[in-house]
Length: 275
Image 1 (tube, one colour):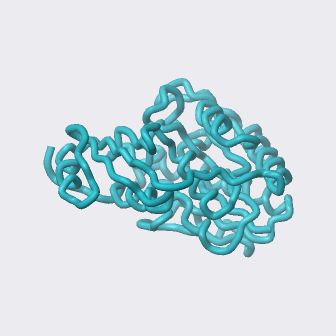
Image 2 (cartoon, rainbow, N blue to C red):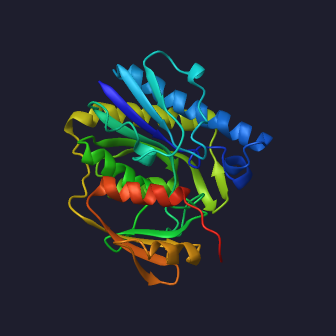
């Protein structure tokens, strides 16, 4: 059995503020990176104990170089660095998997609740919509997994995110790692408690995986991308297929979920001068 893990940092217990996630040279970030790696190692141990023969991890926060390869056993492969066409799910396209796990996830920027709510890039997007509906990173990751016939069976993150994903993915096993009290505040759970919850969710999810159906978003997708930078929105409107539908918003049509992710992922890394 092969298992895929997409790992983000904002949903980790003990991580609550911007310096912890963004200030790479700080002691705050070093501590958060350690907490993040502990959660990933916990999920890997649970997956191997549940029968996984290989685990592929997509390091998906910030620079995507948070995890130390020396921390993992021989059965683990790491996907690291940017850019990459499938974003947080890079690696799901290689070979076959029994299941996927979304670790340390958070709510979308358009969600009222949740710790660290944002969609792909807090600095780039005010909102990301597929077919007129706001989407989170969790939604898109589940659809990408489904595109490659892989069910998402377990997830971890704050209470708001877990409620959001459980509503979107029937049968999902969730591990609540903290309780959101605002954008940058949370009631934290002990490492012992959150790790026990992660282990239980991973094992329960993998045991149920044979009966789980992949979550799919079939056909073409109407993308609407609300940007902070209206200058970039204007530049994008010059490209074939992109229409400027508001001062800072562009719309386009993606052939499928993979192409949609490629468009969103490219814009995460694009910068433009202007106001």
